[in-house]
Length: 325
Image (cartoon, rainbow, N blue to C red):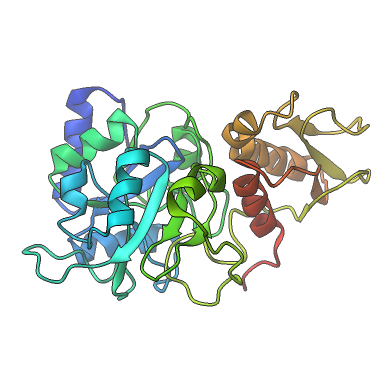
């Protein structure tokens, strides 16, 4: 299969939407990372996402919509969900809500891993919302990379990894947030943070009140991004480093520790927003160049777990976790 490369012009987004309507899979940029999209109501199309990524079938997908009314045709609109939606959508927040069962068009149970809940969001980029609108379907879309590997923040990252495995890629430039959406589970009495991301805990607490945020990893997979090993480069990752070994590359944050070898800085000024934007691209660079130089690992300097730092540390912790067999 030849993967088509589209620009973000209206005419080429419409071509990509036609591919979606015909059961194809298309990678597209959002504010968080590039997603790999298919018609969420078409089980055959959704299955192609899992096959292209090598993704385990028990790991559900986020369903993307273009507007608020469309979302709440498929999930139950609680008072808190509506308040959060008005505040943060379009944007980098995913809500897990109970599914409605009386809709004319059902989301594929493959996309939700046969759960009674559904992870939903409205992306903020114009291209993503136009693709959804033109396709006239909710779009199931995990990150556009091989399962468990580093998420893509440019179209080139997607092409390098999934060329010949997917139908098309829409190039809308680099992603502005750079880490995936925050996932908040509202299906129980107390909101539960399943994955930190582009909307911070500090943003959510004034609206939600107390949020459970220390759930053990992999107790029960009900949303994407909960696997302990995820976002992983080929080289092993070592965290919270104050010194670096000669056979390691350095992923720095703020003023770097002394190192004459291969290095990248997430943000020279220790800016967490800049660090989030750069995270996956820097990891990819160090992984590729480090392996070419025969290095044995990537050492990461400490990063504060506040604001977007919580999401960055979550991704790095999973990147450093023991690899899945």
